[in-house]
Length: 474
Image 1 (cartoon, rainbow, N blue to C red):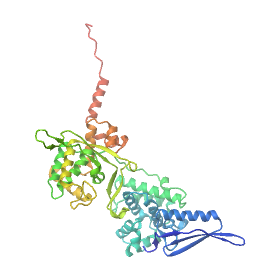
Image 2 (cartoon, one colour; image 1 turned 90 degrees about the vertical axis):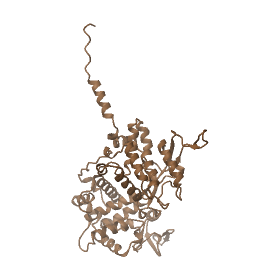
Image 3 (cartoon, one colour; image 1 turned 135 degrees about the vertical axis):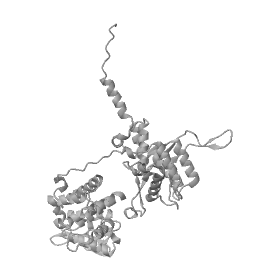
Image 4 (tube, helix red, strand yellow; image 1 turned 90 degrees about the horizontal axis):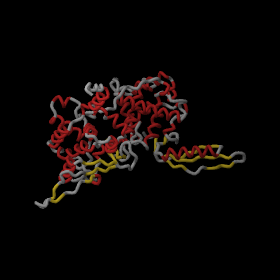
């Protein structure tokens, strides 16, 4: 769109002292155009200037036709839903991860049909959703919006209902219904519905903050959240024999299989998330030193020594259009941990051998990454997902392949955590290694701890056992 700019300069307030009144003129420039806004009260001028500076420091877009931040939109009850959504996206952009930015955009795209004021001149549904997701609700891309998409966005700005319309329960119910519906009209997954509703709730809290609504209308609607389960499906968890067969099947693929086997092994043996494993560098790995064989004089791999992983960052693949750097991966701190907080995970002996072999054969990428694509670039999720699917087809029976067994790469992490818990490792220690809280760990993996039900039954039997009758001879 050609009516916005990020080039903003704010000048010193101009003070004009007349015979009877003093006028304070706030002065600023957007692009090539200069603006002035007069105030009779100094505090009001200072407040307006502070709001301009705050919007500029957050990197918000300014409207060249009004000179004001796009997030301010139209005034009062006339602010359209589209203009409000743009302002909400811009407000959230700076402090959100790339993944959350994409989720916000998709949630707002999903509810847009329920906020159309008319169908007259309505653009094609797919074209409208594309324009919204790729440009309208993407603060980074909006300035490069092509003409066809810009025309659609202008139509939406003119033909969406005002934010105040959400005070009507019928309108609010329609919006909540749209939040739980897929493109084909079918019901979305419970987790998607919850996520979209949470984003919508937060957006309307922002509307209340801006005094566009007197209260959040989501709270006034009686709505029962769909039931979801956070527990891991035991059917997706592989045992050690199956895991080794799958890793062997990966190694047999060409050309990328041999370099991907260690990637999957890291997830299986240390419970890393795929985005954590993708970002590992050689500095994050400590392997046990080789030992010298006195008889042969050769250096050998220790038989039972452990290594350690130490890392503090992950690289989630989301798409270059959502990241600040233009990379397909969003490099951020670890999930549920503060920025700069490190996680330590032990490397068992089988994995130390796999990693040493991998490093000896493939080395590292240009930026020190252990796992790279075949040409040395960042490892793409499509690459390792395809390899994993081929491995499942080769290593599993037809029935196992059709089942949830290790269907996702992430299921290797579930298998590792389940192995630790079933091996008797204390939950607090497992939670630390896996990057969970203990409460989340036990809730998610409760059904994957084998043998606990049998132990409980034996204890109940002992508690209910009738006391033996004393021997009559005694």
